[in-house]
Image 1 (spheres, each protein chain N blue to C red):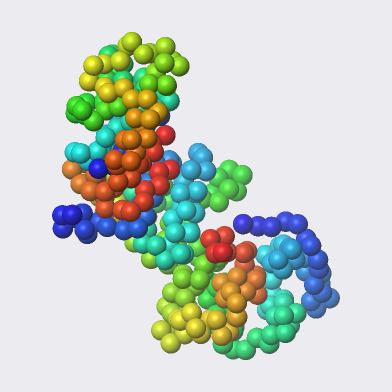
Image 2 (image 1 turned 90 degrees about the vertical axis):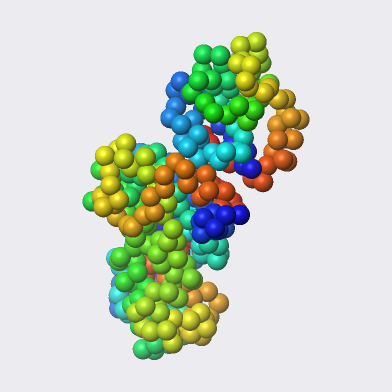
Length: 117
Length: 96
Length: 126
């Protein structure tokens, strides 16, 4: 679900990127890889190749299904794309602590997963 | 045994037909709200094959002036009877 | 419980009875199914009446750009929602065959329909 209320702005490469109260992009089309890096940096994370392959799975999922995945379908999608070793919640929890589906969606420029509490 | 609750009249809705298709041989049908129009002499034909398993809520019949017009094959229950039917069923399924 | 009912067992049965685009019923039903599946429940769908139109191939968005439900149906397999029961007579009376539909379905005739309902722990009707 698109959120339209900007709560604050993040400056990325000279552009103002509007964020909603939970830090999700107000305009999903404003996403670039640099936005993901900046969002991660805010949380004190540095995105590695392992993060990026998951973010790409998330973006592919959204492009295909028009919805951000909850945890279970995210695990399944990662498994299908990157192999069973990576299609585990443990791997995703390590990369995106607390709530991989929510944190991953935010960094990947997706809306907040609606069916994920 | 499931208790199916129906609040639509057979004269204005296709929902009763779906309920009948979904009902098992032991299942019961409880007519509530506008569903009670299906209990009338002239309408009960739309709910065939439910001998002994068709119920209508007295309060909804009375509020619509239908108390004396129910078909004899329909068991009229009050709110307490409705609650008892619910307790006898494994689950209730609402159709609307 | 008979073998047949056993095979049709699941935690949640979500019954879809409304066509796409005309109301929010279909979308809300799918949301409920996804939430259930996200929490690890085994979820089945049963399409009855005009609900079968939800699976017609070739749907698009609404005139004002409202999202359709096709992509959500495509997504069901990612939530391991794989049992899509369809009231066979609802298909036939609308001139539809399983081949016209987006996804593989399990056509259910009148005799087996009650077993599908009885085989689920909870039933949500939309």
